[in-house]
Amino acid sequence: MEYFVVAANCAKLKTSKHKHRLIFTKNTIVTELHDSLFHMNICNLRTFDQLTNQVNMDETELFDVVGQVVSYKPYKFSKEEDNDDCFFKVILEDDKKDRLSTILWSKHAYQIQPHLCESADEPLIVVLQLMMGHKIRENYYVHSCWDETKLWINSNLPQPTDSI
Image (cartoon, rainbow, N blue to C red; front, side):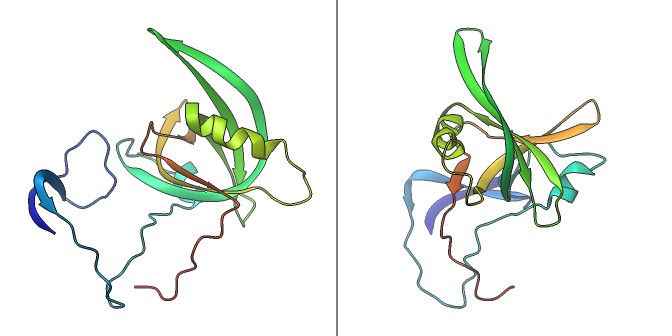
């Protein structure tokens, strides 16, 4: 990368815990790197246990979760100011049978809805990237975050070849 700005990571939403962040300018140049020694793991996975047992959840940090959809509630609608928004409440389960309440807003709700109605013969596995944590009355849940959140449903994601 060339011609970028390094600043303190004090943005409202943090995609990294690092104390600095990179800001692109109109002159920033990014060149793709093909180096097997360069770590390309882009996931910041949190276990359900980490998310449901936190004493002080950092509600500004964005993270990733993966789980099987075990139940859901139909669309609900929320009206805030002039915006009508829909959302789905989905319960995810991990490999340890821990469960996590998940709220998918707007486009993410519409994206998962057709998969919820498909055959129940195979598990519905989702990977949610750049989610937000929230705590209400001692209960923790995660929710999608505007355009930042990415949702993969029963995807064939590349498996890591080694850990760093």
